[in-house]
Amino acid sequence: MSTINGTEIKKVVVACDAGMGSSVMLASQLRRQLAKNAVTVEHTPVNSIPADADVVICHQGLAARARVSAPDTVIVPIQVFIGDPGVTRVVNAVQRGGELSG
Image (spheres, rainbow, N blue to C red):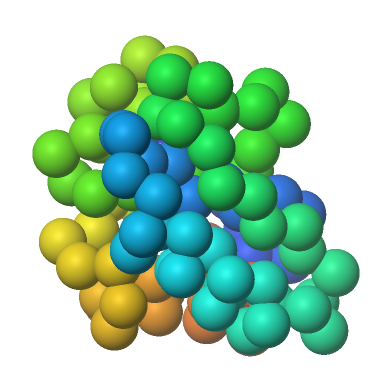
């Protein structure tokens, strides 16, 4: 399990498997929410997570694959793409500071 301070987060990746619907909407929502914090938000396949990702958000069923793809990165598994408490934890960590682990 990795940990990062929210003030150090510069890139958040929303990783998905094959679909492009809900995870793309989440990435778009996060871009708006984190725009004032100079955080880049990208959407990528779970097997192609960029090496410079600070945090990866993905469905809990993909978390093990995300950890293989990005072993030293904070992985935040979620159950639903819109309104999940895990997403709120990431947004709060970026906006208010504090530790984020996963």
